[in-house]
Length: 364
Image (cartoon, rainbow, N blue to C red; front, side, top):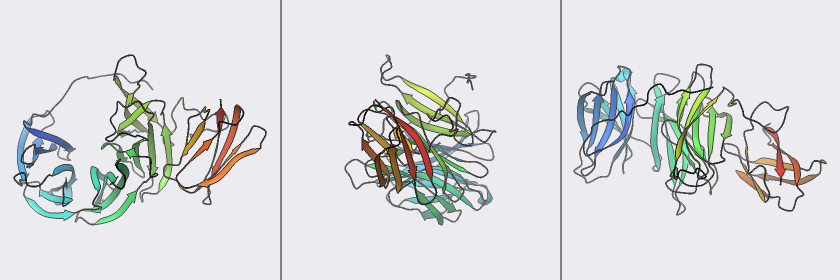
């Protein structure tokens, strides 16, 4: 698939002395923008027409600078003629805002304490919606982010909370527009593997695009890890009419002769996560494996990243069928293959629930 640029321009909002956080496209064709004043922390909502003309702005909360508060996301509630405005503050507050006069109808609180909301989308019914974000693991000096989301009613009751933790020494990062749903699936895209905090895009380290396809209840249908030869950070998911997705990412290749050059990377995948040009190393295999194995080829160590899965049995075999490694692992596994002869090795991965994969590793 080829992509051509049809329009190249910059559109911005004029909000002096304010910091822009989030915008929402409503069913009545308006843009609602959240912002906060940089000194007093006063929270505003701005209304725009689609041609960028401002209609109105409303001061929602003003603490006189006594409380640090950040308006993170806003959810549209057409049936109630209201918005839910989420603040990331000491109280973790949801404000229900009347659309007509922008008064506060009521307030709710959300949990857990360290959950930062980043995206609100409609759910599979009219009485609830989804909120995706990330938890912060503060148990170590380096803060680790954990992707998660919940389903919440229009009355502020959290009905279903899903968290997708990896392992204690690996982080994944979620950017707002990488959480979407289709008619019968939820898609969650993340940056896998980073060591910097925050995970700036110009760090010279391998990062993968981690895509999860979820059932409506949050259980995994399938997952894929893409790219990873350089630094990738997905920024947006766009469902396509054929049941697939466009994954829009930032790509940083530290080998580029232009310093700190970052590119826009667009990946088109089908409904199974496959894309043209993807190879598995196994001629009879037509789908990408769900477990990330890297580096491959390898000379010293080879790593297995399980993503959503846990408690997997791994076995590695030589080309003669001799088992050279085996073991059961919780969230990831690392094997020292430095003493193995160079050549092709086969691995199998399985668990008691019927999960099975196999692939090949090249030892250099």
